[in-house]
Each structure stands twice: as C-alpha cells, then as structure tokens.
Length: 325
Image (cartoon, rainbow, N blue to C red; front, top):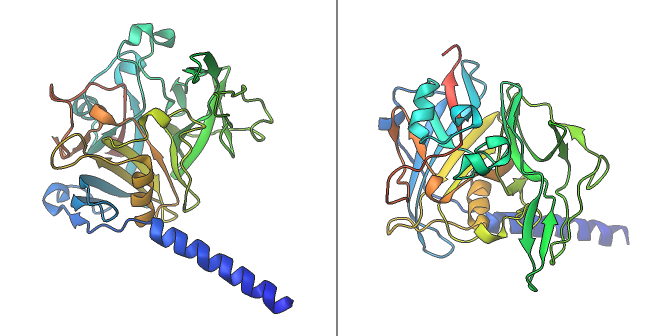
C-alpha cells in the first residue's frame, strides 16, 4: 500500500509536469540590439515574427525584459492628464522622461461620462496615490435579456517597492483591497458584492505603483485565466494584446502582440497565457488591447498598432524610466 501511494504521487506530479510542458509555447525570440543599444543593459528587447506552433497563425510580438535589480530603473504607472483625459502613448512617455512605455488599463472614450470625470475604468496607483479605482460594478445581460449588476474583483499589476505583484483588487471608500481568489460568478451573472471575508479574507494592497487591467493569465507558474470572474469573456478571442508579467528573478516583462493585420492576426487569452508560460513567468495579467496596444522604446513605436487612423489615445501607461529623471 505504501509503495502504491508513492507511485500515485509520482504519477500525479508527472502528469502535472506534462500538462505544463505542453501548455507552454516556446518561440524563437530575436534580440533587437539596434533598438536597445542606448538603453541600460538591465533592459532587453526581443521580437518574434512567425507562426504560433499550436495553430500556425501569424503573429508579431515584441517584449521587454526589465531587471529590477538595477536600482537606477523604476517602473511607474502614469495617468493621462492626471486621470481626466486621453493621450497617445508617445506623448505620455515623453512628458514623463520615460525610456520605455506600453499602454495600460481600460478606459472610457468619453471621460466626461465616466465616474468623477475620470477617463480610466481600471486601477491606477502612482507614487502611492490612487488616481482611479477598478470599476465598482458592471452590468451584464443574461440569455433572457435580463440585466444583472455584477461586482468583479478585477486584477492589477503592482509594485511594493521593487517587488512586483499581481492581485484581484476591489476598492472600498477609496482604499484598495486584494483577495487571494477572484469573486465567483454564475453562468447567469449572479455575483454578489465583495465583503471583508468574501471571496476570501481581504487585505490592504499596499503598493506604490499599480495598473489595473484583466484578466489574470498566469498564477504561481500555472495557467489560470479568470476572464469569467472578471467579466472579460467577450474579448477572449483573437485580438491585439498588451500584457505584463514577472518572474522570481525580479524580472518584469512588458509584452505586446500585434493583431488585425496580415502579418499578425493576434492571440486569445489562452494563447497569451501559454506564451508567458514559455517565458517562465510566475504571474501575468492582460491589459487593454485591441487598437490601444502600443509599445514605445527610445523615442519610437516598435510594434504595429491596428487602428487605421493612427495611434489611439489612451488613459494610462506603464513606463520605465531612470531614477531622478
């Protein structure tokens, strides 16, 4: 009996390892030295142009690996026009002396109609100050066209000093609390409001910088996509993507996938999670994508944004800058 139990444990570990191995998407990344030669050695830029090995779909992906062990670097969450307006990524980046930037969280195209006139509907914390919170409630219609008010704990990327973190966050009276699990929801959109003890015991999320988005893609080195709980299933298909993840090596990864173009169709949440697993991240989160997806490095946009009218104005960006600049 003892040996049977040992065999079963070994079998379970092996099966889990096989599952993770096949879930990973290993791509042949090319280093883009001509772009980052003027950047510090703690930032590396990589590109992939080719086909997804799982389905042969064309994709173009750019990413930055940012080593936070370099104490001269800092990652900042920046709100456009102090949270009251929209600007293109290069404008926000240059105003803030950034050396690298990606678009951030979700937003309203009509800031004056958003809560308090804010353009962002995702969490923004900058230098310890909350500029915008995640949405308090979201409405959805069920199959019978009945409207339901839902209370998602949407996810965010944050920094506690120089330590990256990803959490499911809900705000109450201007304070941000994180939960160990997302707020559950039924198939017919029944989702109660979070409490201090539900969906788990909440704690204050003490971060100096944070950018909301969603859904979570990877948790503790495992694929865990919480688009249902965070109410993002409507955008789970093939789209341009912006995302951020981190490893145990104090390395943060900014990543953008182009889409809606002949050279790059985009990816699903599932595929995006698999790409991050192939990069060895501990946790990863999706940010606003579609026409918003923009990657700016050293004064130029290095991806191919999908809006035919040009760069889309956004409400927030994640930037990397040198300290004291």
